Amino acid sequence: MDNAIVGGHWAGRYAYVNGYYHAALVLARSALGNEPQDLLFYPICYNYRHCVELHLKTMVLEAEALHAALEKLGEGVDDLVVKPKKMMERHSLSSLLKWLEKALAIFSDEKMDPEVRKAILELDRFDFDGQAFRYESRNDGSLTMPDQAHIDVRNLMDRMKRVHFHLAGIDLWMADRREMALAFVADLTPDYSDYY
Image (spheres, rainbow, N blue to C red):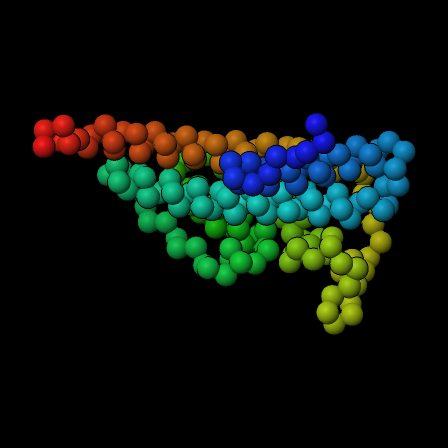
């Protein structure tokens, strides 16, 4: 079959997150083969960066849902810092990461993997607004990447694999905890519909 299945059930958040991750992975593997690494670097990094941004935004929404579920359960959770609307409209990985780390501190004593955190902040440093891997210059004419660098594509691929699976693990943990809390609330809420 040559047709992709898109939309509806196939347009869930993980379809996008995993889609950008796998696109980057395919390009990185091609670059490590016989394809030109220099030319593929930008789309590789764009796809990895966008995957991370989608992960973080998804996790912010999941953190809010988990907090609401725990409040329904009556579990004593600290107040969640209200997310700034503009944070979700912009492309700052560091802002999303900082908010998420504060939220995670409410639910767990676990910390973000330091290497994952470092990789996310490095991506943000290279491309703070989601434009550097997409365009050669900004609206003012300045180069988005003015300094030449040598990037080990295999190392980048390995680091981003660690980032992807670490973020997915945290997200799935929050989703599981939210579902458990909501199921417990449902069990505690009597259903008298059979009696009326």
